[in-house]
Length: 138
Length: 297
Image (cartoon, rainbow over all chains, first blue to last red; front, side):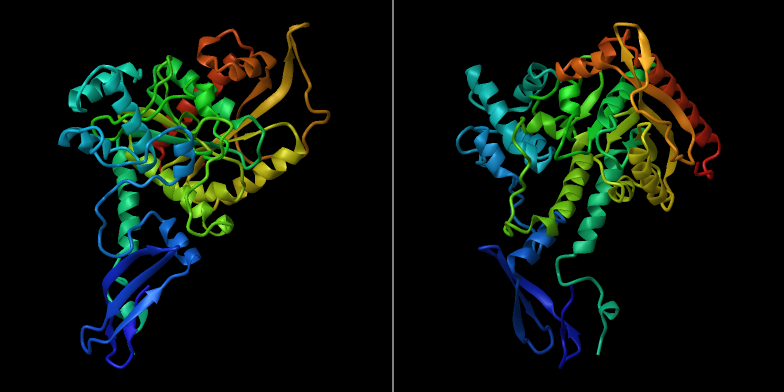
């Protein structure tokens, strides 16, 4: 979708996407010529249809993993906390975790952390991940 | 006044570019896969999933490196068939490691990740309207699966497709023009009529259809050791496609699959030899394709 400032005949530039509010995105545009601004406010169906393409609307986010079916994961006892605050991960291990699909990250993270804790290890590093790989029979 | 096509880029998010990048990442991920072989039908309940696993076993037994992608997100069977129903995905070197069966067949299936009887529910901000976005979400999810797995070097990546005659074209587009197709039917006009629709739809794509398999072609009676008719009449609906082979229904195979046993471990099954012959046919046709790449069927 593109937007045109009719009076200037100039393409509007995206300047900000506000975080979703009850399924609605607020996307702000400005005309680079006259400075006129407007906001496109999506309804939840529009937000969902675009979101289903797996694309990012607006500037890149912080890259935090999002699980597309958190309800199922939580029922299975999988933590959706993506931070390393509870149990430390080295940068290399985190990078490898980021290689796997979003939906599988919470499950893999929980499983590997449990594997490390059960062995009295203080953090997850590349070596722990190799051990976990062998343990889980890959 | 400027039109859409007068303005470079899009509204600022480069949605088209992002989708193209997703597709490029699939191409990269599958760069070590020599043959992408989709097993579909259009009709449900004809034994696509079991046959896919059996074919994988036969191809593996013939010395090929084989993995399976279970594209049926909502009714996955391959995790159970491969004995991998509780296997989580673990990071590998460049993607997620593909879980392997004891017989060395890689299996990626939602059944490994979401245990029965839970259904797969995607998070949504538009609850109650999943009919408007769910198909898009599923294909995006499948594309992500294809892109993020460490498939490595494979002779065959089999894709077990869900039912849906019209959707088979959508899978063809997702997998790309090089993907090969095998269709599965049973000796019934009801089933073959639907498979004929799938064939009609697939023929409009650039993808090559290797042939069809007639599954449940009689059933094996262990009491008398004979294959008896399972369907009452000879099918009147014909598929204009080479028949790669016929496989009888074997109650022992059904019981084995329910137990999570692998057909690879049971070479005495009555269906094993027919499936091996079908695998040979597939390899032969793939080899022929290599020598005549411009010919579609």
